[in-house]
Image (cartoon, rainbow, N blue to C red; front, side, top):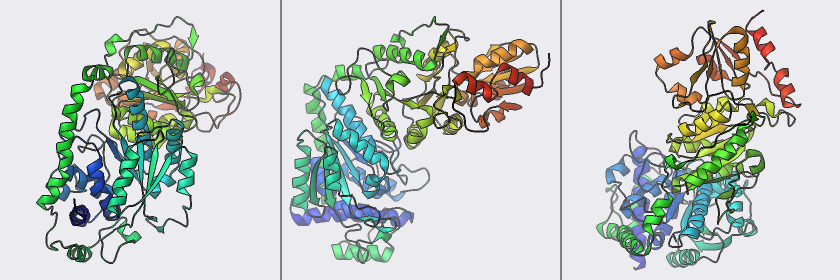
Length: 621
């Protein structure tokens, strides 16, 4: 292909992107114009299947800089994904499949939801981990993970965490393409970002390559070299000029997040030899060349299926929950983190694609899978003390097709909240094991005792938090959770809890009557406070409602809720518990941080004892 044709292809990308932003009067044209040249050569290197976007051995392409959607959608259209020119015209409009930032499950060809900077880098690391694990079982899985990122992605801490994991794990199929244009919203990045990227990534175990992002020969040579792995993850430092080709605005931060303006676009089209009056224009010879991606993808899939163990790979990803041999618990007292460990092992025995790990807390979280090797040969993942990267990697495993979990203390869920929110937004079917769920964890004190965290997690839409009262309820929570097509959080106790709930209870509605009573009082509680509610109820003959999943309860009809909460409703939860005021007349919760001391003593100190609660509700013998 001659140089003139390549330039025509790149300019087509540029003007599609510019027209999209201009018509919407909103968006980020600069990155699209700056990386257009790279995508001419990348289109010849990448292995995609637009005809079958879920083909297991496709290359994964992640745009960590999710603001670059004018480029992303332009390429998906040009490559032949199910995106029309009208979809490009409806960029950023309500109801379109071309929203302001890419959303998983919303637009064909989008692998993960990106936008919060750095998430996509960590997602790409997760994809590379998933690929490495799977290819150890099935060597015919041989795709690459390409991740386009910018200065912002590398400035965010999650990006550093994730790349540290990538280097440690030698994720040789991961290729980061760093759009190094040295511009962010406020202007040149140098005043605040002076890292030596080459040294930084070499120290993390990466192979570092460089290329001129506007020299087609250099781009092609570097991409081919990156694809031919040397056993390390790779980063390509691509030197580009933001808004390349925008007359009068090349290199300006003004192009990062605002339309170029009609006059600039017209002048730029004239300079490139395009008709300035035509918008959303794709020359036929350009479209044919880009659509070769789809044709090559169709052929690649056909040829791959001839040699691959397709049926075995499909069986690996099957999730038959009826095969689970659920554990039973005879212990008088067992922490729900410990009963949960036995449940995780039961799930792993029945579901080959169930895997996960902890942020250096597996012995405390009880998340180790017995009899399994460590990653990449086994299903025990080790993330180190990198909660946020762990969260985004958990999302990537789910998007890849696994059934993954990630674990830490509940108080440290703050460190991965960004990834947790993306999980909910994307409806990823994955699990979050958060242990040490209350002030009862004791001696570690208020820095480790979660107070506001249950309320904060319940505030995230499409995220289901289960807080089981004991081992029996823990099993029943999992039975309900597996049927939810959204992320699920388990908040689990450090301290032992006696079995006070039935073995087989349907928790699909999130709550149930555990004890009937004559008094016109309903005590509602979750987790470790359920047994306390039962103690109080014995003295006043009150009804007790266990609410292991407040989020499922919220979804139920009012008639069901009315059947639970009768008379004077008192909620008991060793947390802020503000959401309980929706149902309760009185909430016995926490109005301060915790304190250091023995768990049982801290519990009583803050009023979580039978005597203190009876006094609060005004009961006198």
